[in-house]
Figure 1 (cartoon, rainbow, N blue to C red):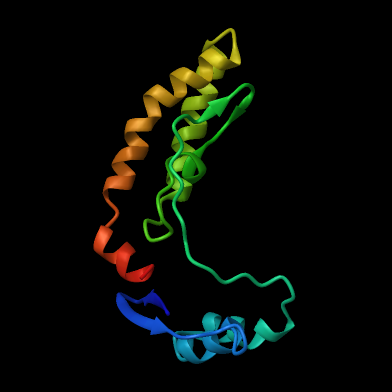
Figure 2 (cartoon, helix red, strand yellow; figure 1 turned 90 degrees about the vertical axis):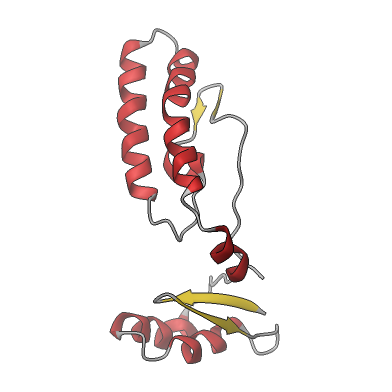
Length: 137
C-alpha cells in the first residue's frame, strides 16, 4: 500500500502487479481536475510508464572532476517542496559567477558548493517528516 497526497488530503492507494497502477490511478484521481482527467484517460496508451516510491539521496559532495550537480539533484528536496526551479536558478547563478572568477573548475565547484550548500540544507529542513513518512508508508 502506498499513501498519496492530493490537495492536502492523504489517501491510500492499493495495487498489486496484476491490477497495476495504471488501473488504480484513474479511479483514485477521478474528479481532481480536467488535466488529471485527461492524463488518466491517456494512461493506457503510454508504454514507458513508471510508478514507484519517491526516494531522497543525499550525497557527501556535489562535484567530482568536471562534473557538478545543481538544483534539486544536489540539494535533494522532495517533490512536496516544489523548490526545484528556484534551487537550480540560484545554483546556476552562483556557479556561473564562480566559474568566471576561478582559474580551475575544481576551485569553482568547491566554492560554489561551500556557498550554496547551506541554502540547500535549509530547503531540506523545511520538509515535513511526518508527511514524508505517511506518504512512503
